[in-house]
Each structure stands twice: as C-alpha cells, then as structure tokens.
Amino acid sequence: MPQAISKARDRLTALAVKNTKEPGMYHDGAGLYLQVAKGGSKTWILRYT
Image (cartoon, rainbow, N blue to C red; front, side, top):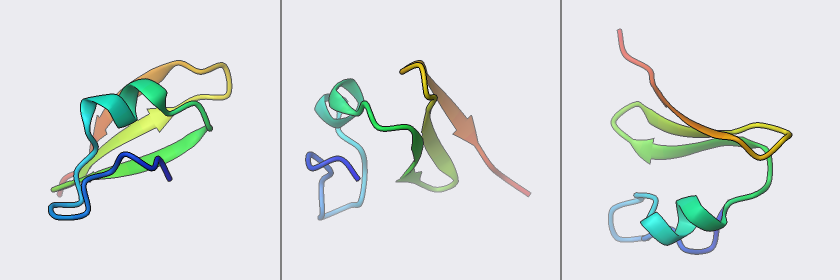
C-alpha cells in the first residue's frame, strides 16, 4: 500500500495516487478504489449496490 495514505481518514492523497506504481486495487473509502494496471495506467472504480 502507498506510504502517503492519510491514516486519520483512510483516504488516498493526491501524492499517493501520483506515486503509486505497484499493480493492484487501493481503497479510498465509501466504495471508491484506485486500480493500477500492470502497465502503470490508473483508473478509478466505484463499487456500489
């Protein structure tokens, strides 16, 4: 997980999003995820029901 995550609210910071290079899904709260692909592209995913 990126080191620049704010522990107070468990939210990704702009700096964390910019610096995240490792592929995976990173939770930002309320069903919002940052997805980093193998090639380094980044997309936001909102999961809701």
